[in-house]
Length: 323
Figure (tube, rainbow, N blue to C red):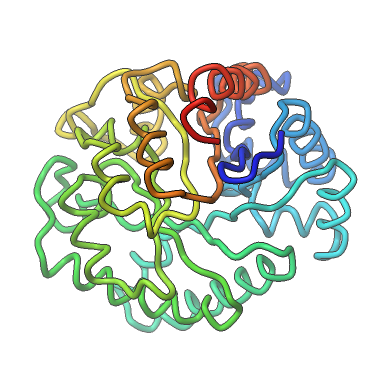
């Protein structure tokens, strides 16, 4: 489905449900990664086929194992990745980078900045050669600056330290004509309205923009429509994820994947939660916005059907407002 302004895509993490692949339902994430890496072309072929079957044109490469390095393993080189996209009528809209490790490691040890710069340089070169210009990158959990609390305020000093790392990485990506769009990970230093405002004020708009994930911001108690209204000029790509209710961060505990499993219980494909998508769409229309709308529901049990449902919701409810 091609539209002049709102270009619809899907993120590959939507297709990470192991049971959908005929694998054990509660397969450990590390085992899932190893399985995909053992047969990368098989899994990437099926994921790209599924995106095309769902009726969208764009792809966001995802966290490992469905990321840009996995795509290169699957198809050998950038030309092979482009051919895999082209034959299916797909376009790379954006590609994900794990800012949590890139930024977090450098904050703990400045010697790690070189490795982070090198990763972003190689990643940005890949994105540019694919004809795209956006790397979606998370930041770091606010718990890193609050004695492990996922529900505390982010100190200004912490935001400044993180922004300094982001600006440096943004400059590296910018050498290839690629921008970093900060993902609004729930319970991070860039998820609540005030924290997003702060991070946008501290980063260079020439190289650093925003990937507003409506579901994550809502889960963390924020107002996603208000964030969009405030920063729509710096949002080249969005994750159109829905959410059924906020989740108090103080209830979260344990390792990352355990917390993520809890969060998944609250996420839905867009149109199936509490977010006011009509108000969202009016903001886009009022600002003549153009960019990528990536349908996302991490590890969806029936991903093709969910993305098709999202497209149908868009066509019936939102396109009349702005498409």
